[in-house]
Image (cartoon, rainbow, N blue to C red; front, side, top):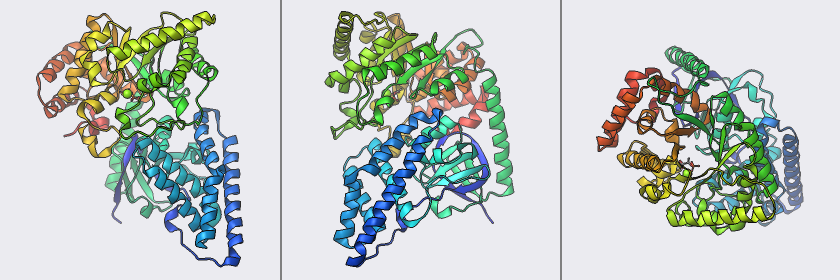
Length: 588
Ligand code: PEP
Ligand code: MG
């Protein structure tokens, strides 16, 4: 039989070849509407109540089983539990049974639709993901009603998991060590499944078109986590080709891991510090294992996102101080709360029509001074432990920076008066990620100890593309002349003012951009822990002379296409192995 290929979004690199294991979960597409008699209504009500209670008991058991290393995901399970306990949601379904005289399954689906309509009125990526949570919770209840299992299934042999969607609760109920890779029909780049796959370091593809029509247990599958391809029942030639690629990738990974603790120094002696971006406390281990020389960006907002109440000063101090002492003597750069836009908190009640241009990051903090004060005090208290720096996101100009500094000094004075110890000279930096900050970088550089260039947002705001919208993602071009010029100007402005500059956007993890950034002489780069070994290897094989020559050509070029061609040619010639695993990053 000929093989079939499905496509999705690659969220975790690698190749897996194995048998499919289908996660037997229920979803609403098969629910039938049945009219029930008046006499049968109480029976339907009881079935619904029992299903809610059984689903709740399952999740409570799962919560008690959460292992230490997945502790961070417990918050999501807790939030699912809260949704199950929410009487308003249950009541909605009960009301549908009574008013429409229908079966419990259909009433439940109506209740989900009601809630989804409310969510859908808000066009925001993060909230769309939360809408999926409602659906997942309701599917657990549906599973109890119709008797198809959600989770807690024994996988006998290592397999590639295929599922409608995968929640942290599912992965805890399943035996993670038996999952070679997974593919889901739902999900996008920012869904929990992708985060989980990267932290477990298994290949994964999400949002696979047509996956559910092809869910067959035992089918042989090739999952390509580089370009999001799922090949069902591959032929011999495909099996041979992907086995070869898998072996090469494993060999490549083993090679890069061997040298990952060596410094990132070019053959002619230029050294760049390689730091890590992290979101969760647990990632600190991966930073050390992959040769990270410190933490260049701790996205502190993740301690706020999945909870309904703001964390306290004590809680935050404990997290920051623990992390600082674990990382010491290496540096830990804590970025203050960057909420808003795609990173919404549950406690966020304010709906904006254009959140990426709204009350985001430092703007939110300056407006909610109590929240800001709590975090600043916690960071200052942690500054006496280890090697902590503080960094402020989304600064748009000098006036805003002056306002931040004024408040920061005020908080310091308060703490001083209260006799609380802190490090007065903790390095104070800002993210440069808004075009107005780029243009005034020479002024801003005189006011701070360091810059960190956030190219994810800089590209979004400079090229006018929503970073979460897949329809315009083709315009996401880190080597666009506007971006290259911006980054160069910021680096030069920092150096003229005698301060250091880091680059912490995804561009730092892109092998095609590294020689250009090296040519600019950035002092450090900060990237996802698992990307560190590969990037260090490129730096160690390159020379500053060739990076400088490449940069000169790129700076003189007027088009993205020419820049991509220039870097491709260099990488192809000098680092062919790297190109093989990252070729999808640069367009033809
Ligand atoms: C950036 O904008 O490049 C960045 C590193 O910050 P974040 O992705 O968290 O917005
Ligand atoms: Mg940013």
